[in-house]
Image (cartoon, rainbow, N blue to C red; front, top):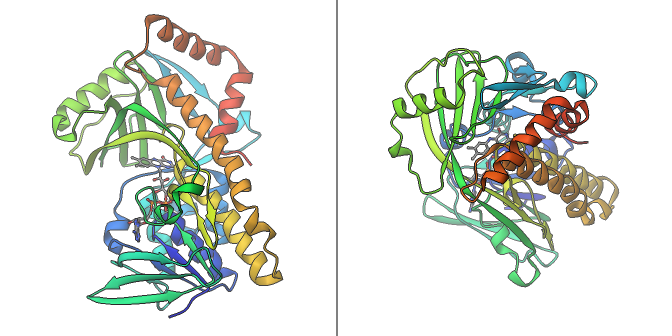
Amino acid sequence: MRTQVAIVGGGPSGLLLSQLLYTDGIDSVILEKKSREYVESRIRAGILEQGTVDLLARAGVDDRVRREGLKHDGFLLGVDGTVIRIDIQKLTGGKAVTVYGQTEVTKDLNTVISGREGAIVYEADNVTLHDIAGPSPAVSYEKDGQTYTISCDFVAGCDGYHGVSRASIPADVARAFEFLYPFGWLGILADVPPCNHELIYAHHRNGFALASMRSHQRSRYYIQVPASERAEDWPDDRLWNELEVRLSGLAGPITRGPALEKSIAPLRSFVFETMSYGRLFLAGDAAHIVPPTGAKGLNLAASDVRILADAFREHYRKGNDEALTRYPQRALDRIWKAVRFSWWLTRLTHRFPSMSPFDIRMQVAELNYIRDSAFAQTTIAENYVGLP
Ligand SMILES: Cc1cc2nc3c(=O)[nH]c(=O)nc-3n(C[C@H](O)[C@H](O)[C@H](O)COP(=O)(O)OP(=O)(O)OC[C@H]3O[C@@H](n4cnc5c(N)ncnc54)[C@H](O)[C@@H]3O)c2cc1C
């Protein structure tokens, strides 16, 4: 088998890249370890920057997000019962974000991609990259007891944090940076109306809480919990009680409902700067992870994919490899800025176990400064809607 670009991983990065390449007449095959049902039901991101929605439009899959996505032109920062509203529309000259689940983005992309014969292989086991440093790379995989090999011009590593692509880059050229946070986010998804029509990022003495949503009828809530905690330690009632405490005075009543999903996500900031090696290019979570505070992960994946798809187009249309050579440099500039914003917003709103009373006073002083300064609010709004 042969293709132009072999894509490892069929999450948002891999699917979007495949569809953008297709619209440019470039052939690709996606190899995905899990089943389609599994990928489509993985509950994760939910806030799309305008640039991400525009990219979905370029890929021809924006009908549903435009119809069903909820436009948000502001969000709330809660400080122990009082509210600061960040009016992103006013502060950024009319920009907004869109609430639309990652599950829906992957369904929309899968619907078009699965119509293309052989464009995606689900449940591909033991995916292995070969000869990525040379001019003729290949990717092999196992399916139903058979081994297949696809030769290609390039490999796009879109296989997330635990994938095989990043691990295929020799350790002696790898440049990685990591910061681990001493807590995680316990999330609950429930079919109940949200407690507020805008998101609330709440600073509270018990720890951070987020009131978010996927639609007018589906709520997504998170609370900060110690890294050692397990979701089983949090029966639904205990979690709803704690949300009521941390969001008290910030929103309307919290409607309770059975958990459709409940899990704990560890928080880390991670950047793997070696985003290309020979004919392998990394995109999305394969190359970087940010804490979900600020909703940057999926949006960063989309911006990597846009830069990479443009670079492949330059190669195939004009025989020009300059954009491919400059891909890591261009992507990393935006990545580091998003890493900084999500790290800063996490530090501002979370209770770290090592914090002294002085540190906490500094946090509250910074939040009060934001409350009183249009300049500070503009900085937050500009980052939240997505930098150019
Ligand atoms: C709890 C949580 C909340 C989040 N909230 C937000 C948010 O509000 N906003 C935001 O922008 N981002 C958010 N994110 C981050 C966002 O979900 C990720 O950044 C996004 O999924 C990245 O997409 P990806 O395709 O690069 O990686 P992934 O979604 O990880 O996809 C990688 C794919 O590769 C496959 N794969 C892995 N290994 C192999 C292999 N060896 N062979 C073949 N296939 C393989 C996997 O099965 C997977 O389908 C959140 C993340 C979490 C965990």
